[in-house]
Length: 433
Image (cartoon, rainbow, N blue to C red):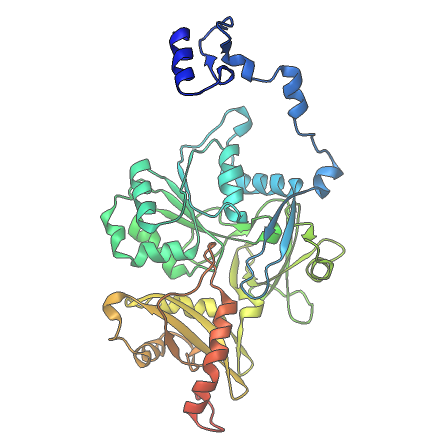
């Protein structure tokens, strides 16, 4: 075989140095053709390639990744995540997700995942790159997310569990092509990255006969901070994962009690080191004693279950009352003719009001009006939550690859639309509840 291979390689212009013999046993060099094992480094050389192990404080302080925050309300910031942060968050997540499985002794779980979350995003990194490896879970990674391909891969590879963001659940609930595929292999879904309404969560659970759990996290806590242990139909995002502390704080810096909204302050081994080359932002977000000010508003009950209200900066203030855009979006998505929606505050004659940008399903375009939706909303939300700022129809709600609505774009749209609406209201006019 060797002479034939050499002749063929010569005809193809391939040098002998790039031809090797393959066999189960070492082959002696023949006509200058070496055994394939000579490509492999010696044990001594391979040892020199080993990364130096980080121990103790060095692992805690050494940056492993710089993941950029979503930048939905402002400019993205580089979040410095240490090796210690990553390992801690993997262990925290695994301990609440698979209690009792000893992966160190070959334990595994009978699951198959599909990897479509961006691997430059904390959510995808933790689950696809780290947790799947830790738990011996096969992952089928998509080159890019295309909804039809996503459904086909679930069907063909018998995917059992999904890590998703709310827009994926909206697609599963509202896109007609979903019904063309057999998704019966699915057993569970974890939804994070953005607020998810309990209505959509429960709808998906019923329609696909799967457990749908929620979680809360952010890039600054590596990925996960709060997760559901067991499925619930209440919309809770779950309980604090291991080795963390949390408190809810009001606008005056006072800790609030149970069932009272407050900003989440959190502390634990998964909290990041700070922001890359941004000392001012680091000092603003992290206290000297390790508390991270998350900017997310939540409530917690006596059982330790959390519910997310919304981002603090995104709350709309109507006559001194707070309105969460996520709540309005959840209600709008209940409408059979609405494919997607985003809510934002709009300032009209010095007063702030809720406004919605709505994408309609194809069959409803040109038929469903803004007044129809406003009338429908009257029986769904309180008076101060009505869409007094109006409704605009759009082809698509702008979102990041992680699934989060680009609030900054929404605010720019509202600022652009405000003068037109004010002129329509008349000089000195004001919106009416």
